[in-house]
Amino acid sequence: PEWLRRVTLITVQDHMKWWYFKRFLVPAVTSRYQSLLLMDSDIASAPEFPIRRFLHIANAQRFALCQPAVRPEGRSTDHPFLHPRRGMSARWTNYVECGPMNLWTGHAWAEYWPWLEYNRSIGWGVDFVWCELLVKMGLGRSLARTRAACG
Image 1 (cartoon, helix red, strand yellow):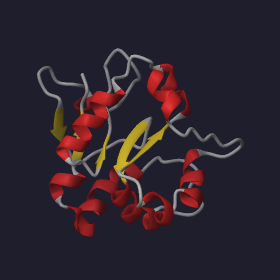
Image 2: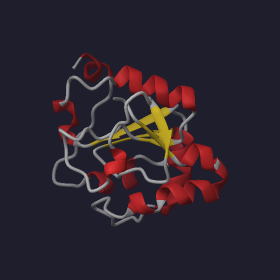
Image 3: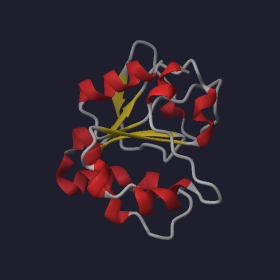
Image 4: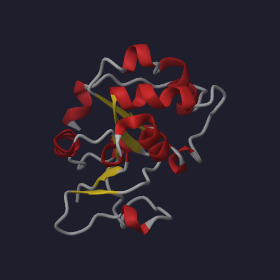
């Protein structure tokens, strides 16, 4: 996709993404960025994804943490509330999955980063706590409890 040619793409061999995130996406670096898009390696296989629209919605709503909706015909999920709803461009929730794509503000990631365990190799389980942590860190319920649905 066109948008993928305009980003810095980093891949790590022989390590899981969460290992990399803890060691290299440190607050001293990430807090300078407006947005931090964390993606699984297979996300580029979805060229029809409206990345510009997704970023526009996230920025307009001032989401601290969000993810695109999960299309029922696409990747499977155990959470039907993650599917898009007709006529809605975004909605609030207290759950954001740990993959395959998350969009953070640089500030929100910097606040969350100390809570990320150093030896974590997979993200399973973080999605059950990070929204609550962001609320407790003072980013506000409306900023931390978000999910953008592009569909």
